[in-house]
Image (tube, rainbow, N blue to C red; front, side, top):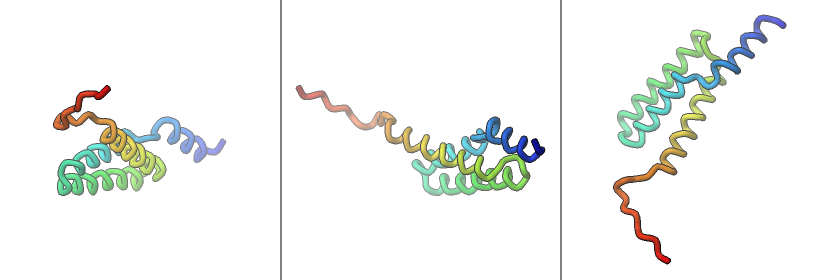
Length: 94
């Protein structure tokens, strides 16, 4: 087995999804729901983190894309199913 195949296999098993990029995009997307300015800055910084990881050869572009996709799904689900304490629940009608 050539060395390139071993590296790809290890990359898929161990690194995917990359936690650092996932956490960066997760924080940026959550901040975006609160403040568009802060969230936009954090999105740019998260993109730079991902780009630097790819350009340095630490991660494959697919790893970064997977981390972004998982963070988008996570934030979407969290916002969809989160309990909003400011919304008063209405009593059930029977």
